[in-house]
Image 1 (cartoon, rainbow, N blue to C red):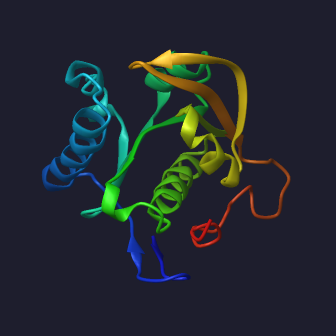
Image 2 (image 1 turned 180 degrees about the horizontal axis):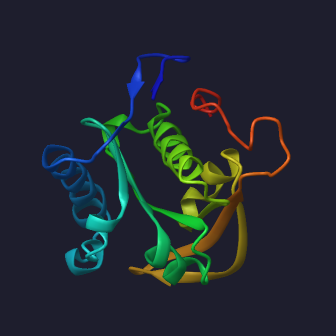
Length: 173
């Protein structure tokens, strides 16, 4: 997936080989462990090998939990993926990379025939996810010492586009 609507092209690719996963881990380490102070033992939860990952090389990464791993996190629904570990390096923020990563993960969930995506957003990121069509629900809770809220986006059955949102659409927000 590539976007170039509002500036330089953003290329998001699956991270499905050792080189891609090394880049994903480096980005997540920088954003979560170094910058946000998340303990490494919480960041590396053992689920990466069973998840789908995307990478905007040198800029950002994201993960999609599936099946039993997703159901354990989203309240028991194996037909709803769990988007998580979305990380964009500080110098690359504000340029639409996060939106492109989310859209690429949503596309993977659709490709797999899933009904929607659940996530647990850091409170400061809720407006970002709302712009992408997610709805917050339930009480605020703490995760890794930071306030979060559950959010969900269903893929709108019955719409002509199957709920698809073009990856270019919201990159300037």
